[in-house]
Length: 315
Image 1 (tube, one colour):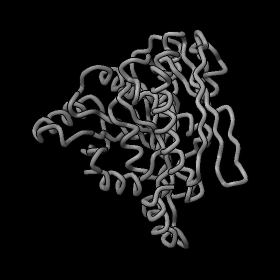
Image 2 (cartoon, helix red, strand yellow):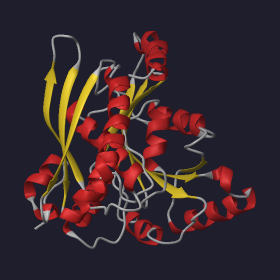
Image 3 (cartoon, rainbow, N blue to C red):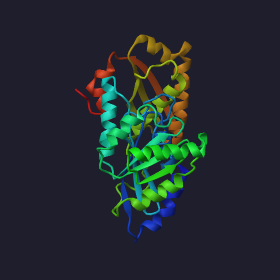
Image 4 (cartoon, rainbow, N blue to C red):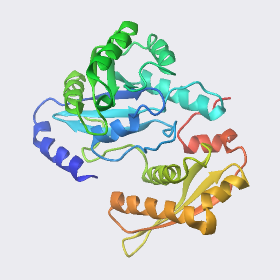
């Protein structure tokens, strides 16, 4: 758990005792690469969702848990909504809309630089059928002139009746306190769903696989296609307090395997080193990480891989 989140939890421990607590679920939806994962990590105060240059990085719903005053807010980072082409795409978009319909609040995140272009029109159309209260969050406000932001907010509010509009920068944190204050007060009274020191519902094995996938994309996002997948196969706690982790990177072709390994194994070594470093910090224990690259043709049509990612297999 990050120091920031630890302090946050500690500060509110007493406030939660003997006073009414609040809790609820907030679905974070939007087009691909709008900054949802970056915003989730900012609001939770710890890394719970992977971030990369590659579009559609988040594949299944990741829940990040934040405590603000006496409220426990469970943010659901949904896969970016876009026009699906493959089976995996369809599963991700279905998962995103399913997450939205299960939430107390829906938070639509728009990249202010991109505005209402691309998949946003389709998302706004889909939101008309969703009954939950909706918040509009304009991200990357430090990149856009104030008058353009106001025009963008007005245009989006003409299409959907948003309860409130917030302007934030997920990178710097600007505007995020106001957003948290509003959500914390708007959620219903009720007990907390998770222990106060828990920041995600993602099993550690899966989070470890996600972190390696992030490092893979950060290193090879120009060369390696989107169709790669990481699974944690072995997790062994050792007597010396360290942990041995074995993971498999699945790709669809031999040519992709060569890219993932790199010349003389350079790429896989760099990916392993970056992932091991971050996992050691998160787990607060030494990590021995072993990565293997395997070719599995058409893994995107394998129901078992979908289950591993927490997605329903679309027939």
